[in-house]
Amino acid sequence: MGNSTSRIIPAPKLHVAILLDGNGRWAASHGLPRSEGHRAGVAAVRRVVRAAPSLGIGTLTLYAFSANNWERPAGEVASLLSLLENYLRVEAHECAEKGIRLRVIGRRDRIPPTLLDAIESAERMTAAGRALEVRIALDYSSREAILRASCWMVSSLEVTDREFARRLGQVTHSGGPAPDVDLLIRTGGERRLSDFMLWECAYAELLFTPRMWPEFDAADLEAAVEDFLGRERRFGRLPEAAAAS
Image (cartoon, rainbow, N blue to C red; front, side, top):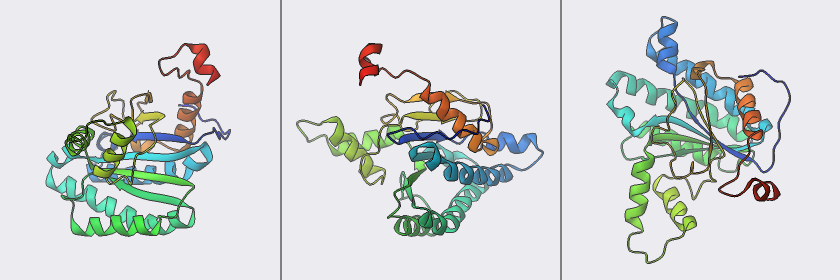
């Protein structure tokens, strides 16, 4: 990715989703334990959160811990959850001061009580933030969320996209429907969605980078937004009609 120093402020504000991939491989390449890779990944989260508002990003959704990640070794799971708890407790004050709202999406019935307390505290403390909404996907599975929302609405005779999105937001504790994802980024060289925001990414532009997540910085995020702004988004329409709208 490039290292442009220009500032990008597109309108309306974008929803960017990122799969934070490559922490373990980055650690292995540096002769470090996987836990150090996750720790370096937290530093990358701080970098992109601070850079996002100036790049015209209004919503930033980060895939931190999937429902499948419970299958990892217990020690690694405990380390990941501890890092998430520490991040929320440490960053909440600064985020509140900068107008950044923190929200955690996903299941909440399987996470430790101390982490749940940190989530609820951070969400309360930052609730007034309007400069940027940072959504951290924790114990998250898009397929499971879609299934649960579908079961919830099975008795309805007619369901609109908007109503279904609202229900989907409720089952993932999103506080209502999130805006559709404009740009989805995956670091670490893999090229798949891995059960992440399948409904919201229906028309997302996809960008895959070999950069490992701990290496990802503000310049990489800016280059990704620049790439996105250079793409033609037609949403099924002819190019002329898409350009006119």
